[in-house]
Structure formats: C-alpha cells, structure tokens
Length: 476
Image (cartoon, rainbow, N blue to C red; front, side):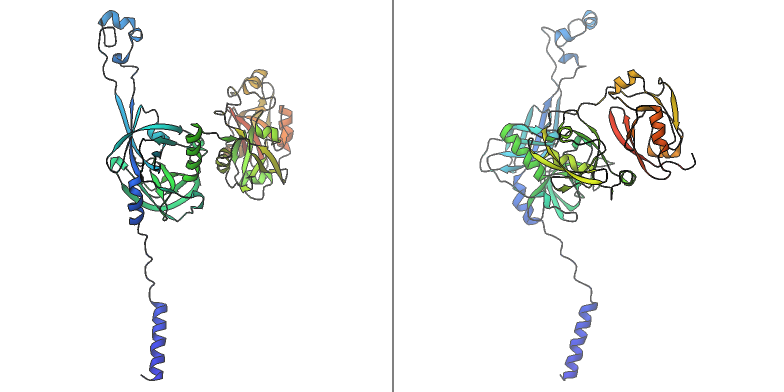
C-alpha cells in the first residue's frame, strides 16, 4: 500500500469515527446489590386487637345501656355470658436489619398501635419483635428481635444524594417479598406538610406500593440512603411519586431511640412563612429566599435571642435557607442546648443573631383562642389604596385574639386585596413597618402606600399570624 493510500485510509477511519453514532450508555446492573442486601430485608406483620365501642360483645356489664338490658335480657358481656372475639387488624410492611444482634428499622406507621409485631426473615424464621421506640414526627420505628449473626445492610450518607442518581428499593409490596424496583432520585429536601416538617424527604420515581413502607432505598454502592415511607397517587398504586426518609435522619432518630427510648428535638419557637416575589420586594430582599418570621412564641429561644416579627431567617449555622421548609429540619436535628447562629435579614441588612436551641416539649399551642368575625366593631374606615373596609376591634375581640393592636377587615372592595387573599374577618396588625391600633392609624399607613409597589401586611387569621404582600391599586 502506497503512502497516499495509507493516508487516505487513515483519514477515512478518522472521519467515520467522528460521524458514527456513539455506543449506548451502559445501564447499571443491580444484581450484585440485590444478592448482597436482600437477606437483610425483612417482612413485618403488625397485629392489633381493637375493641369496637359499638359492639355489645365487647362492652363491660356497666357499659351496656339499661334500656337494652331491660328489653333484651342478658347480653354478651354481662355476667355469665361469653364475650365475642375481638376483631383483629393486621397490617404489613417492610424493614431492614442494621445490626447482627437483631435491631431492625421500619416506619412508625407500619407498627403504630400494634399489640404484636412479627419479623419474618429470608430463611422463613418468624420472630416476635419488641418495639424499642417509635417517633411519629419522622415516621421511624426501631425494633429488636432476639437473634444473633443476622445479615445486615450498610448505611450510607443521604446528604450526598443528588437528583438524577440511580437508586433501588427492596421490599414486600402487597406481601410479595424481595420485590426489587429501581429508578432515579427526582428531588431532595422535599417537605410534605406541617405534620412532617422535620423530614427533608427524598423524592424518587421508584415504584413503591403498599407493603414497601419501611423498606430500604439503596444507592449504586449498595448502601441504604433512605427508608421508603409514602407515595402520592390518584389510584392507590405507584405513579412515580415516591418519598423516602433520608437515612441520616433515621440514624439520628434510631440512635436516640436505642439509648433513651425517645427523641429530643430542637426548637426556637417561631412561626414562619415562605418568601415569594412580592414579599421579597416589599421587604427589600435581593431575592425570594429564606423564612419569614410571622409569629414568635412568648419565652421562646427566638424571643430571648431578639428575633422580631418581620425578620427573614436566611441561614442557620451557616447553611443557607432557600425555602422556609428547610428551616424546621435543620433546627429539629440540632441537639437542645446547642448555641447556633441565625442569619437574619432586617431593615435592609443581614445580622448574625446567636440563639440557644431549646427542646421541643410538645405541639405548639395556638396563639389565640378564636378567630374574629366581621361586625361588632366600632367606627370604621376604608383603606382606599388597599381596597379594604376596616373597623376597630372591640375589647372582647382583642381578648379573644390575644392582641393589643389591629383592625378588623369588614369588606374587601378592591381587586388587589382579593388577589392577595385578604378575607373579611382578618385582623390587620401591621401595614409595612407600622403597627396599627386604630382605624385612623390604618388609614394613614394605607394612604402612604405607593401604587403598584408591594407592601407587606401582618394579618391575624384564625389562631395564627400570616404576612400578606399586596400591591396597592392606582386611582383608588
């Protein structure tokens, strides 16, 4: 072959390599992960014997109404009469062994209220489990079975999870043991409502169904990174919206349950809201991020630290807060007594506010006894720029609400107020930075608002405070 022919051949090979389609990416092979970890995944059965309050066979003699005894004579449950069997409720789920001496993690809702919990191992052994502890707020339960040498899983670091990474679940959907499903991480740090505000959920598109609850979610290294907890579904089955508890959260909870049987959770005592574009503009924030403080519990850690209503908490111990839902898990995971630093945006500048985290002792009590209703007030007035008709609160209404300021919204007369969600019966406590105690003060503050520029109202609605951003209308 001549040099010219060789050169032509080489050029042709280079060109073909550039235009040829790339080889398809190799999909992950999960078989090794499953073979190594499936023996440590267990099936859980929870049995609860429940009494039916309307079933005479379950009533004691003194509980049976006199009328029934008079007309129907001796009944089940009365002296000398046999009691009927109590109905039994059986629920199932999954779990996984975290120590060779028999500690098992699962969901709180799998074993909640059970009289007997049974763990079935891969070798078909069925062992009665003791509930070491259970935490409703994070939906985590720690069980103990009397056994040794059990196969275990390795626990990973859920903080390193990123959307797009492969994950797989092993569990017992509908009782079908060792079912394996796979998908990707859809999102991290999801919040699913106030009842679960301490869990930054992992969202995946892994097929999770009834019976998967409490089972492990693995990464490609074969480490558990989550506990499968719940799904969103319109049909009752998987539609690709599955949520798992991060294993880092579970490790903290299970360690506390194992050592002291309960969970200590941090709290600073603030009621917060998310920041949207209008609120950010009204507050002078450079971007809509952080947690807006709408209310502060009297005597709380936040009050002692000098946090104010209207502050925006932008960071906790150096960790930035993008969405307000990110703050409760951060604080809740902090040991009570810890001295932390809040980044607080106030009056156009950011401050570092030291706070000593307190211990959550129970659900937050409502700040007021009842909501105000429209009417019953004294002289009223109209905040024309805001599109509201208000009236003064009576002394009785102030006492009911537990406030010493505010005016009552009588009517919503403007589109801006309606779009902002202002409702008759709301109590406006503050317009911008101005506390309003009378109708005249409200009128002055409303009159100073600029058309088209967002302004913040602090509103008492029901038993809570809420900030509402409103854009005053021109020409009203």
